[in-house]
Length: 54
Image: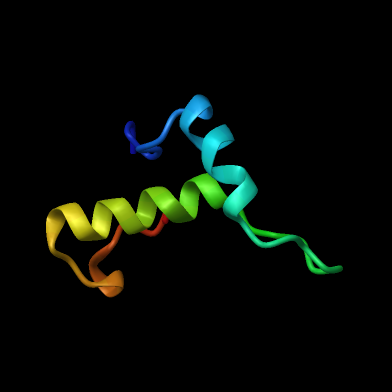
């Protein structure tokens, strides 16, 4: 999938302070998760219909 990420690094840097801190459990890629949420909302899909990359 060529457009996996909907947010660039500058946008993620602005959002990063809003993310919860990790407490022992490694976090998943926040940029990938947010991009998945944007993809779902923009296309009116369910998570089940999202590409497996998200």
